[in-house]
Length: 344
Ligand code: 2U9
Image (tube, rainbow, N blue to C red; front, top):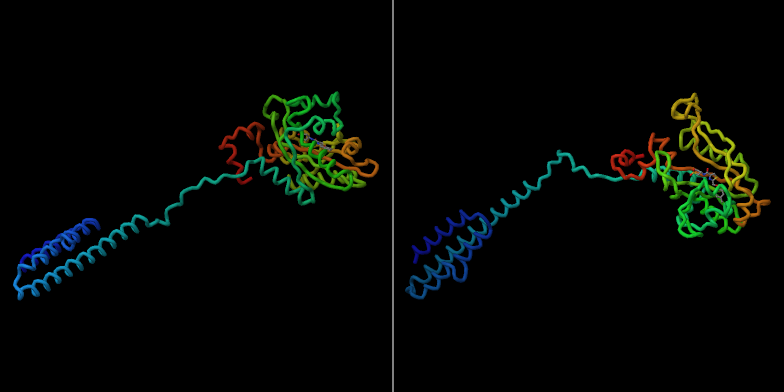
């Protein structure tokens, strides 16, 4: 039985030495130390031994069991250590390697321009108002001094949904709704950005859907000079403090008098070039003093209150500011175009 135990010990230690992994090590543990293991079998054979031999074999069997147990623990620790190193190896990050490029998105150029203009007017104490894109004929036209048969309606070819409902052709109805909501009781100043729709065939400078930002200020003793001052501040903040503005007479049904505002051409600094078609000036927006009829329909007494209003197209401003030649590129969702302006 002694030899048997020595053989078992050598054999077990040899197998433990060659064990590749935890599972094979576990199999060895079971094979030698388990309930049906070799050591256990030897101990079960103790009965046939003489009383003198029993304690000797018993002690030896326990010594062999402990030697095999320790050898297994030692090997297990080695294997775990090796597995950990391997894992650490495989998981070591070469910090010198360049990081994986994460494609970050960015605001649409139009969104940047609209937010830039919003911040500008918020800085001047204006509220930002929004309104429905599906508008009634009353707020889109009548409240703005464009009665049913008014010829100027044709200037804004519309997408009618019913006789009384259409896709708004400008954001002016939002101003009309705001005036009504203040019931002619208090002064206010607001701008309203948003999408507008006109039944137009798309080309490089026209789109059936485009963006507008309109503004309205109503108070007592508001004069054209207030409008000019406001537009001059806007132009200098938007296009550079070295830019001059000029106002030219114009016509809008909802303002009287009406103007169009130009800024001095940055390319030729006013001397005339292809960008400004030789005029030295570039048209940016329209505006004027709110028509008394419009104030009245908004619930404001034109003998007490007056106001100015203006309207601009952010696409046009973006095209000028970033040299975009085709308005349709704003809506084509061509990533190659859009990502140029992520940091606009
Ligand atoms: C109310 C009173 C007055 C809004 C105005 C303009 C002039 C204007 C154009 C800008 C670019 C249209 O898209 S565009 O071509 N708009 O020039 N808009 S005055 O006047 C209002 C609006 C509402 C109650």
